[in-house]
Image: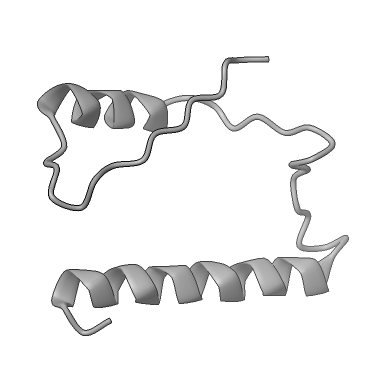
Length: 71
């Protein structure tokens, strides 16, 4: 298993070009499933899938609110 990396950014710190490149590269990595992170099959677990989609929608609304300054 890969090394877990955690980093807390200060509110006034700007993200560097190198950090942006790292994030972009991470987007290209394949998804990794295991016992703690199993794939969710919408046909086999419709309630769990619906809950996940509600959570994703709520997260996206919060993110959009931060960008517009209304959150």
